[in-house]
Each structure stands twice: as C-alpha cells, then as structure tokens.
Length: 119
Image (cartoon, rainbow, N blue to C red):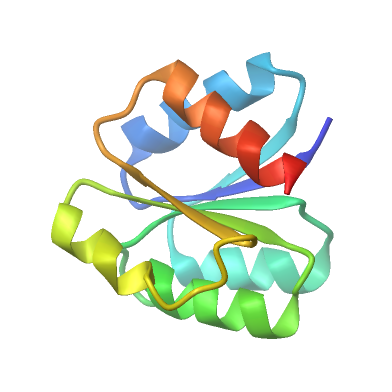
C-alpha cells in the first residue's frame, strides 16, 4: 500500500484516478492545483505524486522539478491530454518520473503507478 497524492484541476479526472488507486489499496489524497500539492508534500510523506501538467498556480513541470530536487524518494507520474506537453518532461530522471496521456484507462493508470513503485 502506497501513499499517493493526486493533483489535477479537473475534478472528474481526480475522482477517476482516486477511485482506481484506492481500489488497489493505496491511501489517496486529492488536491486541485500544484500549489496545494506542494503544501501537502511539504507536510507529509507520499510515495507517488500523480500530477496533471496544465494546472493553475503551479503547473506539473514546476511541481515535478521541485519534487525531484527536494523530495528525491517521491516518484512522479505526469498526466496530460496534450501530447506535446508531455515532451516537456523529457529531461527528468526516468527512474523517478513517468508520463501518461489522457484519456487513460483505469488499468493504464494502475500499471503506471505499479511500475513507478517497482523502480
């Protein structure tokens, strides 16, 4: 069982992802933007951050950059409906960060999180 933080400004995506990962036995917390995600990351432990790329206040790339620098044990799954946006993640350590294009299935999300946790 892992501690997972989901950051996405789209409530439907957050809820979908939360149900999928909770169903696998993970403890999941949802937030609606990168700034709130950063606040949660600074106050408690998470194993995986699932973050949308395009969010208000602090986008997924900015959040991932902070996390990989200041919380190196936290794995990151960046999600986006814009394929070009995911290319912005190319410079990150592939052992700590993965990407997933929207729309995705429950199984694709579960598999991506399992793969990150296994790294």
